[in-house]
Amino acid sequence: MNGGQPSNSGSKCMESSMSESGFKAGVKILLRETLFLPNGVCPVCGKVLFRTESYLCERCAQSLPRVTMPSCKYCGKPLPEKGLDFCGDCGPLKDPVLAGGAVWLHYSGSGQRLVHSLKFGHLPQLGSWIGRQMAEAVREKDWAGKLELVVAVPLHEKRLEERGYDQSSYLAEGLAGALNLPYKRKVLKRLYDTPHQIGLSREERLINLTGAFDVLEKKAVSGKTVLLVDDVNTTGSTLRECAEVLKRAGARAVYAAACAGAQ
Ligand SMILES: [Zn+2]
Ligand SMILES: [Zn+2]
Image (cartoon, rainbow, N blue to C red):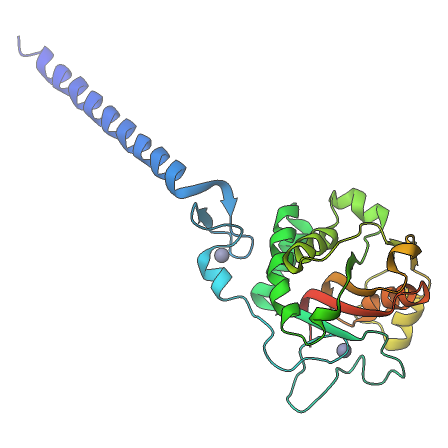
């Protein structure tokens, strides 16, 4: 008679625990759908993003290593100590080519992780967002009002195929929008894929890049003061080589903007 009871109460127990776990799962889904961005994780620390956070988590957005110290008057890279006017790469040059530069972040820690996500994280829209933030660093410069046109350092076709998007073009687009300037696509072309510049001497870098770029849209840059955009300014040689061909094509002056720069 009582034989069925335990099993009954057991099944009741199971039912209630099932409905309880179902309820918990429902709450979890509800919380996830109302609080968190679907599939959104912070590209710097990997934390799941709240719906109130876009692109970066609040903590990482607040702690990005912004360049506030004195920077090179030619390329904009942060300088290691006060009292210097230019970096070790621009200083020794007779003609630094670049008329000025702005760099938003230090290329270290979370600044470096952000650039890495921009390049390899399949996040082109992150590029537009970063470009908009970079406008802050450009606006601080006394030359910001002279700018007339934004162009991007191009990626070689082979790299574009591998990556699927050109990160610097997204930076340039976001930056131009925030500065209310026109952005012209495909002004420059990378003629051959150059090996990385890091670890090469100044002379080797110049040889490495000489003839690597060409201007496809000479008319667009003729007589213009141009803002040239790249993701990272490490040695400044890519920016200078592009500035050189832009000036040969008739640009009046070339200024540089980079998301991150190394001292
Ligand atoms: Zn984060
Ligand atoms: Zn410099």
